Image (cartoon, rainbow, N blue to C red; front, side, top):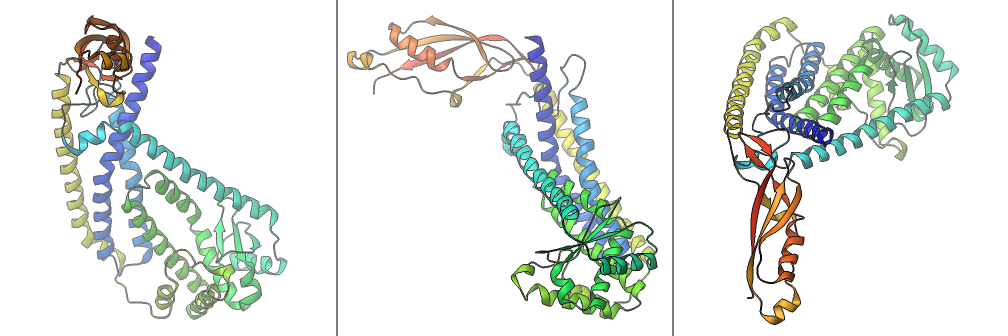
Length: 437
């Protein structure tokens, strides 16, 4: 029994800690997004590499902050005797019924919230796994093109990339895609090999080499993990999109520098856009930003100040965001501590949750005979809210009515009794009144 209770306490602690972490990230994500947005506005004319770094830092904060928060919440409930209290909780996984408002309502439903979150994360994780499996299958089964493989290898050498890069020709692909880190591979749509001039396709391959040079595949994997774990927050998706937009601009710049012809890459992107609308096999737009905007930037690059100037101007905004985050966290921690202390000192009897059980059925024989009365029942409720024993304290005067009330109410869930904030085993009495209307 003690081992089972210990397991239940650990699971309750994990669910409560994770529930609070997901709830706190609602405001934490807003803080990170606003701070990042301010920085990106100030750096709008800086080099895309600097904006890319800022967006990546913002997304990294979205991952690290909840992890640290979860560890702190879990540690606060991990004392040796199992009696530590999470903020706002009376014990491991025990709802603080004294709290009011939306937070208390969500707290009582942490189990369902965490279960739904885990199901969505599992679904998105399965989608990632299927995508990686598809890439592995394509690399192993799709043919290469010796001529284009030689051109890609020569272009990689010119760009200073010493690693072996493979090329595969794939049907039903919207645009060239780079995959892999240790042994990268470039997937080229078959429609581009047959329908695009070779010098323009070479420009697109130079763009993909820019991704390989900067190890963008690894950052993209981190983005997918963040999107899966924090899917419910729009800030994560906005930051991830900004990262992809800036990444494409960086790769465009890399290709333009090594080709020496920005116009050629702009023409290649324009041709790619035309082919995407010329047939159903290329109906989807290329990922990583708007093609028209990328073409415009290549043909008419805007003058930019040095990145350090924009970064210096952004420092006060970052400091204000940090102060705001620290203040919000301090206020939240203070309120949670007050609620936790109030709950820790609470003492109450066990309470029945009548919504968790069915209403006792009035025996038909007693209805026909016009029997009425009140039965008093006693239930022994353990710290998990489960009834372990029960008895009839005072009969209604009719055994069939006593048995009907006893059978129905025994299946109810209970909020356990609290003694100084800790759930304890205790007998509690419940009266049920049988009345004919």
